[in-house]
Length: 258
Ligand code: DAK
Image (cartoon, protein in one colour):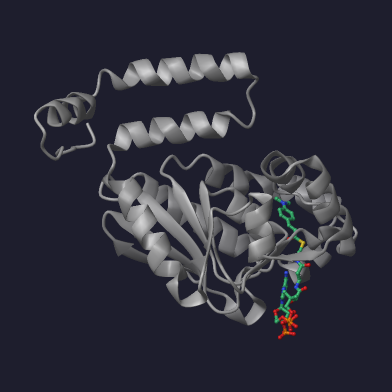
């Protein structure tokens, strides 16, 4: 795996832990960091030995948003030329599940990155929000679409229109995070959850992720059709045979990912 400046990868098969490592600026997401993150995630996604990844941040932040220093120098032509949105689409296309372990600030693009993951665990001291409005912009990596779908339109309106920061407990009550953990237990809890997911049959896990993510964009009828197709496809896998046979034989299944 290639070396990264800002994204540390710890392979702990069958999982991997990716740590955003730019703590001096609270892991501000500049173009280089985002590109490295997409590169590393794609490499891990293509690796059959890895079934789930944890994403977290070094220091006081998960990520305090896009790099304001970098953004300040950009005009609209730079956005059109550099296509900064493309790297976010690459992260959205990762097929293995991602667990966000939000260890501190998750603001703006940092929260959008957490929301691009499939499950969010938060440390008790974490602070979350979409402060873009204070800078004269709006969320640009999914916040206006994903936040209302996750916490409801009125609550999302308040978060996005005020730019306020919220505690992990408030995020839990809003339904934005799965669990709040004492700070020193966050990473172990995320690892354990990731290991459980990685132990499940790989093709079924991917299919479930695809269907779950589609539920946010497809009308119900189309979503149900997608679910049916994915369900049917799994009947061609060896792991479906093994999973059901193991149940009937009252033994632990031995999945191969095939
Ligand atoms: N960018 C650059 N530097 C940042 C930063 C950021 N987002 N956040 C913090 N830093 C830097 C600070 O400037 C400071 O650097 P030095 O002064 O030491 O050189 C260092 O990190 C420590 O921060 P503070 O001194 O401010 O620490 P405090 O504890 O006092 O405050 C804070 C922590 C998180 C409350 C504060 O740092 C803060 O408010 N940070 C900015 C949060 C913010 O506004 N984030 C939203 C940015 S807008 C897009 C996709 C996504 C986006 C845009 C486009 N496309 C696909 C095109 C997303 C946009 C955003 O996220």
